[in-house]
Length: 167
Image 1: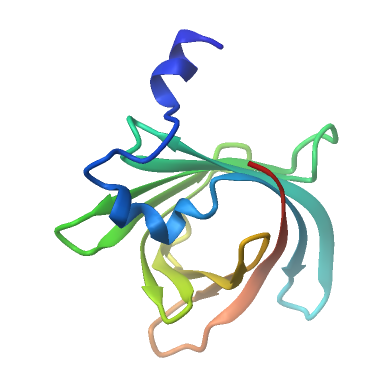
Image 2: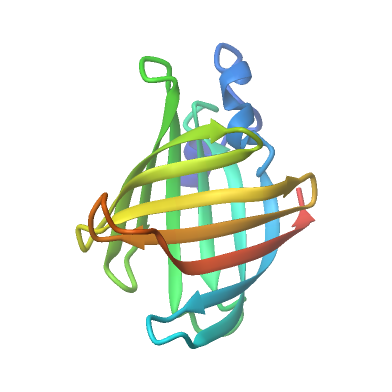
């Protein structure tokens, strides 16, 4: 493994933060997913994909990588998310980037009942809500929604149905 990856990766959460890391810590590992892209005209595009989650930065953050479609097919979307718990807000800073499509977003993530809800803005200035629902040890349903203004209803744009493939 390269020096960079050795410095970046961690085996576990930082001892002083382990209790705060549970919200996303269960995601550590690899997942296959089926993706639905809900277009504005009512049609739906379907792909497969994969995502991988790991401890980084001495266990003080979680980084993941989402890839669509599943490798070895050429990517149409590939990007990392950095998730950092902030005790001062009791929530997580979520920073997403997809350099292939020049898509970027920043959100705050928190537990809402049994779900994880992340709210922020995307690179187009739209309000974005990403939700992890149906959370189980070996599966989850991720729902991406957007709206132009607080007064508008949320519109589902993406769904990922993920299944654990490894730790």
